[in-house]
Structure formats: structure tokens, C-alpha cells
Amino acid sequence: MLFAARSAVALYRLLDVSPVFSGDHRITRLFTLVPGSDFGVDVLSAIEAVGGRTVPWSEARARTHDLVVAASPKGDVPMLRGTHVLLPHGAGFNKSIPEEGSADSASGLDPVYLLRADDAAPIALHAVAHPDQLARLASVAPRAARNTKVIGDPTLERILASYPLRDRYRAALGTGPRKLLVLASTWGPESLIRRHPGLPARLATQLPHDEYQLALIVHPNERSRLGTYELTERLAPALDAGMILANPHEEWASVLIAADALVTDHGSTALYYAAAQDRPLVGVSRDCAELIPGSPMEVLLRHIPELASVEAIADAVRAYRPGPGQAAAQAAFAHQGSALTRLRTELYALLGLTPPVLGTPLRLLPDPAPATRAATAFDVHADVTAEGARIVRRPAGTGTPGHHLAVEHGAASEQLTRSAGLLYRRPPSSPDAPADLSWSAGGWTRHALAAYPGCRAAAAVRRDGPCLLDVRGHPQPYTVQVEPRSEGGRLARIDPAAALSAVHAWLITHRTRPAAPVSLTCHTGERAVRVLLRPATADEAGRAI
Image (cartoon, rainbow, N blue to C red; front, side):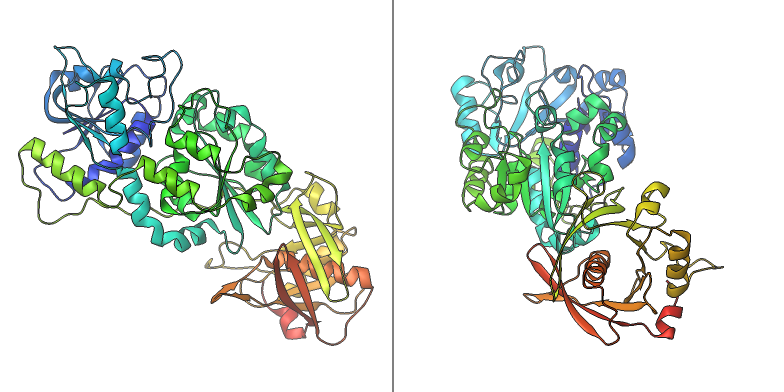
């Protein structure tokens, strides 16, 4: 069996389908790179990453294969000898690529590529995801529609099956009680990342850190065009602020499941999101020349809020009303929940084999990786009251300076550290070293206040239990206990550093030195948590960070 891929995105489609042969010792899976695509540079490394065996193109052409499976009809795929199967390349066939194939024909349903010459291998099975796609193909190329069958979408199958892991994915990302806002960019000149290149950085630096987490899904073609290094350099301001850049294989779908809202261009990622969950969708490219009128994505973009400005993102998310997303997904995907089983039946029929009793074609999506970078210094805006403070933290230097600068010691630059009003230290990442020399909480806060004379307060954030806050000029440090908030049976915990900023602002504003326990309220967005402040005991100050 030969999986023939012209691009990384086509390869990932094939990998979603490969498990239909799971557990069958009669099947040998081989991969080859079909030459000629501008986006083929990542294919071989992606095959190597999954441990697949690669066959050189010259060798692949010389052999006859029992089955040739591809996710794109373009290029030299017809030169491969064997029974050919064509899988969906995307969701919905929503756009037409200028200067490619037939004018106004949907990419993926273009007769130029589907009607092969007599000396080329015919397509024994063309799998599509919805009856409308078969009808569209039959209307423009009846001969190409003869071996076309409505199977459903194998990639959607994995997303739907993995949806119960949503909480697990959010935990892996470190989302916590924040809203996960995901940006989805397709490829080409009308994509989000090309038309709005500054949007990720502006959102990453302007969204309140304790209310939102940001992620970006970039089409594999755009990654191939730029290369990972160039892409990450262009996105550096957003990545430095903690934005997640999802891996193009599998991880993008895990991040999609974890999302609370999606900002999308005309790419089909939004249809997968809408099929799995009816959560807010916001559009950024309604006026797109590539988009085919009446296609599922075109209809969807017409019926969801459009992002007018970065500052209006929260209003745009709130403006979404349930319904359009699910309707668009229904128009793009049939047989939801049974696509892989249907495909398995068809492929084994082409091979003339009976599927094995054991083995399942369904593979759940893996856990996504957290952000590789994080903001470590914040401009903290504080609205202080008698009962506590409302805190808004944004990455330092990206907006108007706030009440104070809060900096994580050991993670930010020396310049930022020396400018901090509140300096805090988190526990070391490797606490189980065989030999150890560690700070006590009180020892470190005293050291920090002595080493950085411009710092007004220092705090030790413990892995478990209360934090220690030492304010310059106060006779003894304080214990700060942040209580979780009960929300519908769940316990929401905010970043203790945000609560420390609230307590610091409250103490500085009121110029008080509490000698007895005080209960304060820390507000972050719509969430309020109780914070207990009291003088620390000698034992608490002496505990290791």
C-alpha cells in the first residue's frame, strides 16, 4: 500500500486514514513524496517524525501497488501504477485557486485533475464528505463522479471522538479558568496571517493575561512557504507574550477542541470547530475573492460577527449566536461518527480482503503542548477599593504603564527585574535534584529587597500552600492564601502572582500594616476570588520555596 503525498497537509490527511488498516499483518504501509508542489518541503521530515518508511519517487513509479492512496489529485500522482483512491483534501471545497485548473472550479473538485488521460491510472474510489459535493462534481464532470462515494470526513471523525478529552487538553495547555481564544489562518494571499500579520501580536499583548489564553493555527502550506524558523521569528512578539503556536499535525485539532472561541478567515478549520461544538465564531475575511458563493464557509462567514478591531474582540465574541456554525458543518460533513468505518469497508473491498476482527481505525488526538514561551513581566493596572482590588495584567512594555510592574525573578531580564515594583519568584522546575541548595521563602524575599533597592515588595510563590509577601518598610512578611472559587462544581484557581499584585496594590494604596488577618477580594475580569492576608509566622517564612 502506497500513501502518496504532494504536501504536508496532504500527508496529515493520509495519516488520519492509515489506522483503517490497524492490526492487519497483510498490509505494508509505504510513503512517497510526489514531486512538483511548492509545499512539499516538509513531507519527508514529517514521514520520518512518525517513523514511516519512505520509498523514493523513482522506485515508487517503477512498482505496481495494490492500493495508491492520495489526498490530492494534482501533479504526477496518476503516474503511479495501482488502484487509486482519492481522499478529501479539506472540508467543504470552499475556494477556487486563481490561475490553477478550471476557472471558478472548487479546488479539489476540478475536472482538470479528476478526469485522467486514458494511459493514466483511473480513480477507483473518490471519497467525498457530503452529498452536495458529489452533486457539484456530477454537474460539471459526470464521468469523474462515477466512482465517487460519500464517505464523510476521517479527520472530523478523530475530532468528534476526541471531544470528551477537552478538559484534558485544556489542562495540558495550562488554560485554567481563562478563555482560550484561537486564531485560524489558511494559506495564500487572502489568509489571516497575510492580510492581518499584526493581529496575533496585538491580541497577545492587549488581551488581559488572567482572562485569556491565545493560540494560533497556521495552515501547513504557509508553514512550508516560510519555514518554522521564519514563521516563529515573525510571530515572536506574540509568542513571547505566551501565545501557543499549534503543531500542524494532530495538535491543531486538540487545540481546536480546547478552544472557547475561534477567530477565522475563510479556511476550513472553522468547519471542524463548528462540527464539534457550537461555541463563538468570529470572522476576519468576509470579502475574500477565493471564496465560492454558497459554499459552507461563505455562508458561515455571512452569518457570524466580523472583527472590526482588536479592542472589539470581546464584543464580537459575545455577539455570536448559536446556530450558524452547526448549520455550516452539517452542509460540509455527512456520516459524522461513521466515516472511518465506511472508508474501511470500501478500501478492503478494493483490495478483495476481509477486514480483521481485531483492530480499530479510530485514534484519539494526543495532548497538545503548552506555550514554549511566557510573559514574565507585567504592567499591572489596579483599581483598589476598601475590600480589595481589580487587577488587569498585560505583558510589560506593550501598552500604558499601570499601577506597578510585576516581574518574575529568574525569568525576566535584569533591566526589567531592577525596574520591578513587585518581584516574585516561582518554585524551581526541578525540585528533585539529588543535591540541593534552596532558598527559604523569607530568606529569598529579604535577599531580593536588599539586592534591588527600587523594589517595593518581594514575594515567594509556593508550589502548594500560601505565598509569602515581604513589603519594604513593614516589620514582618505576610502570608497570602488564595482560595479557589467554586464554579458549577469546579474549582477555579487564578495565578497566585495576580493575587499578590492585588494585595501589593491594596497595601500600598491604604498605607496599612495589618496585624490581624484580613479578607480581600481579587477581581480578574468577571471572576472574583477571596484572598486571606495575615502576618506570617517564623515557620512559614522559613519554609523552602
